[in-house]
Image (cartoon, rainbow, N blue to C red; front, side, top):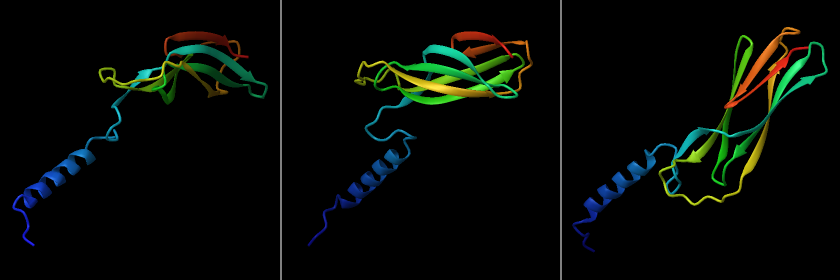
Length: 137
């Protein structure tokens, strides 16, 4: 049986298509590209565990604005008397037309701060756009 003359060109085209699909980053073919965005913060509460020395935690409730949003990462950084916590969501890139359910969800996070706090000293907790303060025990 004779092989068609376009077979080598078709083989090259399929190889190039496969290579392009495999090098498209972390997005799975057919899935939208995603970006990190700061999560909306619903509540922030400092909790002190009854221990010696006292252990400090921040209970954060963050929002998932729609069915396409997913928790991405929670980071913590301390600079003297200020603790900065960032809560990040992963969302489809905003310029892509994606249908998402309009169900607002919540995620609770318990962030351990440790026990390295000076008694009677005021500390500030910044979680995205929400600021709280507390006096160490």
